[in-house]
Structure formats: structure tokens, C-alpha cells
Length: 111
Image (cartoon, rainbow, N blue to C red; front, side, top):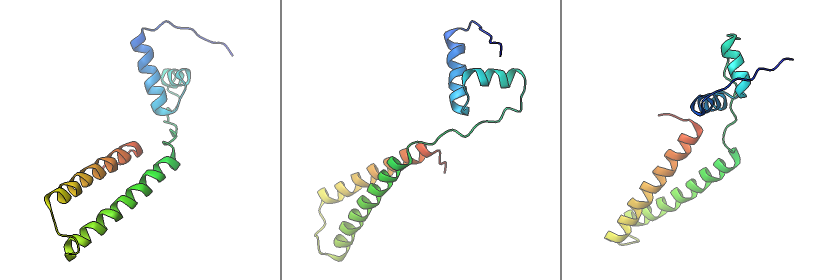
């Protein structure tokens, strides 16, 4: 099969590379499919490591459970409320929300 060599600027090559990676193509396949209008269909791009994301989600669940237990103890009066504890819980809540947003972004989940 014949090959073709072309000269590109760095910006042009970067653009082709990014688009090819986004659609799951090699650079050559992307250019060829666009040039010849070969029913360009984005290929399924592999998702991030599912095992690692599952571990993160499990850890988030454990942290959430611990925070719920602390909140339950506060609400029942077993632990007297104090500013430091409440501030710590608020900080944990903000951190967990940020981690959740990052995981959703990584998975491509939009709300």
C-alpha cells in the first residue's frame, strides 16, 4: 500500500494528534477518513482505569459513612457540638464534593 508524507507545522500536527486521540484514531487514519469522507465515526475511546475509579468510589463511601456517624452522634447529643468539629465536618464535606466532581469529570458525567 502506498504511503504519503506531508509537512505540517507543529500546531497542525498537535491539532491532528489531539483530535485523533479524542476519537480513537491514529493520525493517518483520521486524516484519511476526513479527506475521503469515509463515514467518519468516532471510535470508542477507552475509559480511565475502572479499578482505580472503583477504589476511589469505595473510599468515598467509607468516608461518607464515617461523617454520617459523627453527624448522628452530634444530633443525638452523644458528642457536644463545638466550632472545631463543625468546621472539620464542613471542610470534609467540601473535600468529598470536590473529589466526587473530579471522578465525574474523569468519567465524562455531566449534570
